Structures are given as C-alpha cells and as structure tokens.
Amino acid sequence: MAEPEILLSVKDLHAHYGESHVLHGMTFDVPKGEVVTLLGRNGVGKTTTMRSIMGIVGKRKGSIRYGGTETIALPSNKIARLGLAYCPEERGIFSSLSVRENMVLPPVIKPGGMPLDEVYQLFPRLLERANSQGTKLSGGEQQMLAIARILRTGAEMLLLDEPTEGLAPVIVQHIGDIIRELRKRGFTILLVEQNFHFAATVADRHYVVEHGHVIDMIPNEHLAANMDKLKTYLGV
Amino acid sequence: MMTIFGIPAQALFGQLLLGLINGAFYAMLSLGLALIFGLLNIINFSHGALYMMGAFVAWLLLTVLGAGYWTALVVAPLLVAVFGMIIERTMLCRLYKLDHLYGLLLTFGLALVIEGVFRQLYGISGMPYAVPKELAGGWNLGFMYLPIYRAWVVMASMVLCLGSWLLIEKTKLGAYLRAATENATLVQAFGINVPVMITLTYGFGVALAAIAGVLAAPIYSVNPLMGSNLIIVVFAVVVIGGMGSILGAIVTGFLLGLVEGLTKVFYPEAASTVIFVVMAIVLLIKPAGLFGKRS
Image (cartoon, rainbow over all chains, first blue to last red; front, side, top):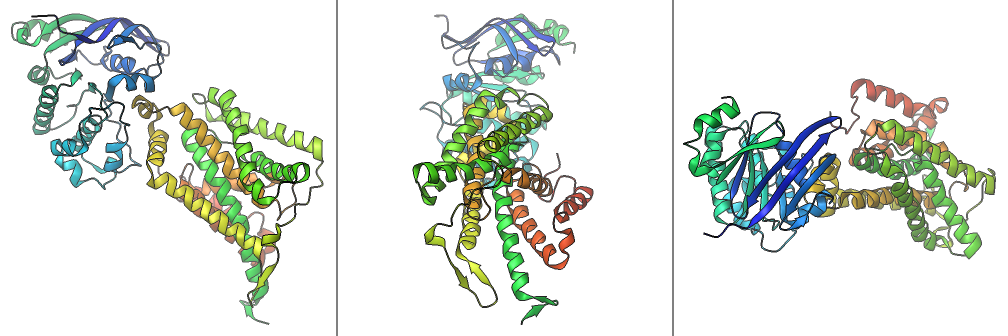
C-alpha cells in the first residue's frame, strides 16, 4: 500500500503564552482522510497545539505545513482559507446571534462544502431551534452547532477540541456517530480528547502528548495491545 | 393662551422640540461610540472633535469650493471617515491589547490636538452656516412654530439610526460585527479579515459623527469647541444606555434629549445637570445600563 498523503505536517513547533513556554517541539503528521487524536493529560498543550495550527497563539515557532503550504507566519483568517476549520473547546457559540445566524456565520471558503440542508439532516434539532438565541441551546446542542457550522464552508480538515467534554453518554455516542460519518464523507479530522475510550471508537491513530511534545504514536488497531502503556502515559 | 400644567403650550412644545433635536445628536454620536467601543474596545474621546470636523469640512467646502449643503452631507462624512481610518490604522490599532485607559488617553489627546488646530486657524467666535434654501422657513402648527430644518434634522437622524440598527441586527454583515464584538479571535479563525472590519467599523462610527456635525452646522454656529461641549453629555448617554448596546445608545439618546427639554420647562436651573443625575441613578440601580447585559 502506498504511503498516505500527508495533509497537515507539524514539525518542531514551539509556542508561548506570555512568559510561559507551552509547546516544546511538537511534531506529528495528519494523513488525508484520517481521524487523528491528540491524547494527554490536562495542561500538556493539546489545545495550544490546536490554537497554534489556527494561528491564534501569541508566539509560535517551527513549521506547520498544510497541503504543502507553510502557515507559521500567516494570520488566522488566511490559514482558515486554506481549508482548515476550527471548533474550539469552549464551543464559541455567539449569544448575540440566533442559531441560524451562528450556523451560517463562517464564510464559505471553497466549493465542495456540505449543502446546508444536508447539515440540517445530520443535526435536525438545530433546524427546529433555528430562531433561538445561540446560547439558549443545551450544552449538547451547542456542541452540535459548533461542529455543524464548520461543515458547510468547504474546509477539508476539521479541528475538534474536546467535543465530548461535559456531555451525557448518549450525546457522546451521537457525536461519535457524527465523526465516523464525517470521516466517511472524506473529512480529515484532528481531535483533542481526554477520553481515550471514546477516541478509540472514532480514530485511525493517536498521538500521546506530554509536556508540550509528542511522546508516542499508537495506530488505533494496536491500541488494545498498548493499553497498559497508554494508561501509564495518561495516569489513569 | 393654551397652558399645560400652568406652562404655555408654545414654550412646552418649543422645549420638547429642542430636546428632540439635542436627542437626535446624542443618538447619532452615542451610536457611533457604542459601535466603536463594542468592537475596538476603545472609548473614543475624539468623537466630539470628529463631529466638529464634520461641521468644519462642510463650512470649508462651502467657503472654499462653493459646494453646498447637500454635497457636504455626503462628502464631509467620507473625508472625516478617511481621516478616522488613518488614525485607526496608524495609532489605535496598537492599543487593542492594552487597558482601556490607553485608548482613552490617546483619543483624548487627539481631540485636544484637532481642536487646537482648528482654534488656531479659525478662532472660537464661530462661523455662520446658512440653512439650505430647500429647508428654510417653517410651518405654523397652531400650537407651535416648527422650523423645517429642525424637523429635517430629527427625521434624518431617526432614519440614520434605524438604518444602522437594521444593518447591525438584520444583515449578514451585522452578524459578523456582532460575532466579532463577542469573540474577534474566533471570527478571524473562520476566515474573516477582522482587522479590515475593525477599520471600516471605526470609519462608520466616525462618519456618523461627521454627518451629525454637518446636520448641526446650520443650527449651532460652526465652532472648534462645539464637540467638546457635547461629548461629555454623550458619554453619559452611552453609560445610561449600557456600554456597547446599539439599541440602548439610540433610544437613550432621544429619551435624554426629551428629559433635558422637559427639565428646561419645569425647572430650568437643573437642565444642564439632569442627565448626570439620571446617570447616577441608573448606575446605582442598574450598573450595566438600561440596555446593557451583565458581563
């Protein structure tokens, strides 16, 4: 089998928040069409990695190549227009916008995005609540909206930061279904997760992060064999 | 003669009209301030000076180029907006990550510089600006005399405020603006050029101030200090309406103009302080302002 095409390649990435040095040489690849997770404990730099890729961290150094384009010096609006879409950990639903306005806020950056009616087929609840204020939705619905609104923009790669955090098991399961469906439709997904049981149900490979760099890569099919090692890494 | 609560109707309606006119200016200026504060996080103390510039540019267009009122109404706001956008790009844009105080100090300094320059060039006695002939004269409504120009100012201001409100609340562009006011970083990460949006928003707020200046030119004389006389009241209006609230700025502007007018009729001694009394009361009862959201 030929080597898969690498869509996102992060090399020796360093990032700072003010005085604190958060990422210490993150290096990993995301092959096109795969679901890849960053696993690790709280505060090891997973979210900072996401924010660095989107260009919304104060200072960053190293190399982030997306589809062959170096993005380390680009402003975040230009990075997004290459085909990356971001669903932040805090979900970022706008309270002064209705659900419908939230849904159509991210501009279409390329042709080939999911048509709006297909997005609503995946998330019928959001159509029912289209006129509500964005932040009047339940936590699970807000998470759905945060994912749904980046599907129609034509972005090929989705960055999902802890989409299951704080949600009821049945909703976590639903988000798992959605992620598998999106993979089937050809999206490449980088997922930050604390819950590796969930990650195992959706991902192709896992990068384990500690102290701001990647310490191991485990393909999903080898996860069971490496469970003890992983539990030591994550301290569970 | 007809009287209401012992006050001659002529005087009452006259003062109410005056209040409405002042309210129209408060509304246009505080709307721009609220927009700018919401997105840029800058308390734009130079707003009064930019309003004055609008009036002066209209006067200069007339005396130097012979361009009339209607031309000035379009050209003056555009010129002043470009001036404002240059200020934003060269100076204000460096302050967004700092404390509010820095923006306040810089714009206050700018206001002093702008006013100083016009004072140096044109003195403080004020320049007359004639009412355009299409809007000269007035109507006798029976209970009062209504100058056409004043009716026009109130109408124009209401249309501008309503138009701005619709633009912000009901259009896609307005949705970007509202979203960026909440979380500019995320909006930019969706692929929108937020810095350009900020510059245009500042330009829009400044243009509103300059239009108010042109509208004011035939009513008050064109004077380098006309802005600083107004701006303190306008800040009180913004605080009463709720920092950053668009609807709050508009409604409060008109309302407080009327309150001021009524005070002039019933207790003239308090007319110049009534707005600040209202501000103190509102801050005690509802610190976020009448239309403000708790943050």
